Amino acid sequence: MNMDGDAKRGVMTAGGTIVIDAKEMHYKELNKIIRESILSGAKNVLLENVNGQYYIGDGIKGDDITITVNGVPGNDLGVFMDGPSIIVNNNVQDNIGNTMNAGKITVNGDAGDVIGYGMRGGRIYIRGNAGYRIGIHMKGYNEQIPVIIIGGKVGSFFGEYMAGGVMVLLGLDNSEESVGEYFGVGMHGGAIYLKQKIDFSKYSKEVEFLEANDVDMSFLKKYLLEYAKDFNLSSEELIRGPFYKIVPSSARPYAHLYTSAAF
Image 1 (tube, rainbow, N blue to C red):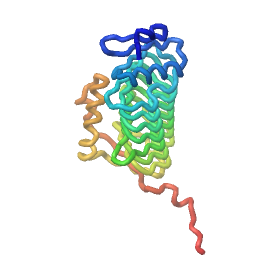
Image 2: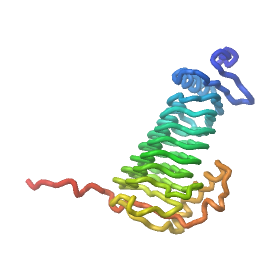
Image 3: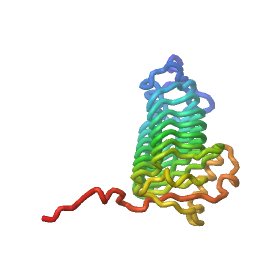
Image 4: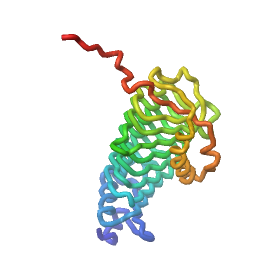
């Protein structure tokens, strides 16, 4: 792509980084420029003045690509993404990481609803709070383990119908309880880790509450250290226990609703 000819499209280069000014740019045009830049060999893309544009980073492949977003991206950030890293220096809206396959999304703020829906792999790290229905239908794929870590609190239906992967809720900077109602409803796979105890009445009947053991903490440590580094937090404080583990009590939480007929 001839970058010199794209000045009118708000595109320039700076030290090997493609810089795109997204101010008042339609999301289709923005995503077209992002894809063209990456296809032409760009490994670092910086988006300035983002304000609600949808689908940023969707379906993009390549584990050596970084997209940095200054502003608030719209819904469906990183949908079907397969490898790149997206860094958002603000809040994000809904549906980020939907069916994400690999890569990492780092959010230096709060997130909306339905984060990581059907997520198959990769990591989503959120520094602040997140909304409702986080991690629903997370499942993993083959050897991939999707991971979501949230620094603050979340709304209701956290881990709804979760089938695989790992979620960690840290409850940082919050004196109040970090989860809403209907926690883990229909959960039949994966694991959720909490850094604080919560009212057991908010749990669904399909999950069990345990204290994380040494094996759990050994697994979590690498993700927590990465999270601490990304957000410039104390790693020692972050990995200090105890942590609590929530797992499904059955792989078939609704088996009792079905009957088998005898023929």
